[in-house]
Length: 261
Image (cartoon, rainbow, N blue to C red; front, side):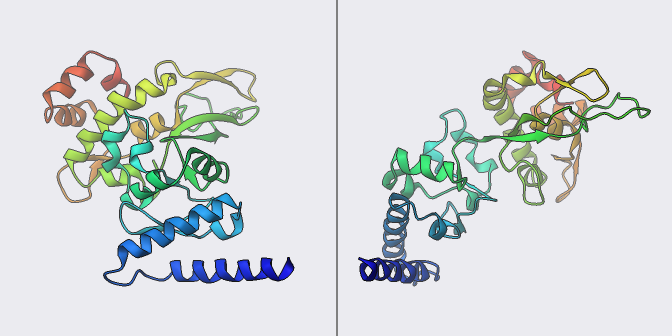
């Protein structure tokens, strides 16, 4: 039994070593088949250590399974309302569609439990300060009594985050507004009223989703020059809405545009 286990470990080790090598030119289908079969086996046998760092096929290139930087499931497994906006998210963070066919629900559940993948475009983060509150006095301390969980959009921030990608074109900015109005605000109802969090100052402060704070305070609206952007304002949001009459109508019928400026 011990020899058999060592033999199996040796086969797995060699298989992973091969998978981590660049695919041989002209053998991409063979590589993909081997990649999928091996990751399927690793999940089935609960080989978490070997899964960490495993190179997965993505919408563009490959990316490793890492608990500190999870990947999105294939787009076809997203909520239907989110699927049209896949282009907003980096393709190298979206798993290849071949996994959607080959892996079962239990496999995705396992990868999610191990924090290797995200099965939702929404994540939670801890609110440990009242950074988003602008009218608090400086003479007393303000911070949550206990850290509270607030919603965030996956890969929203960072040097390679979603908002940085929007700076490249007004067209992407328009698509982002469509994403917010057609999917995000329908999925996360807390954007309208927020919720109250107890503060060490003895009062309750109203907070909003983390994604909304970033949308309102970060420069992401393209101003036409390569890579340059401004924080959203009534003027530059109006300019984006002029690119799509249907989107302009949808915003005018809701509080959305006012909330993001």
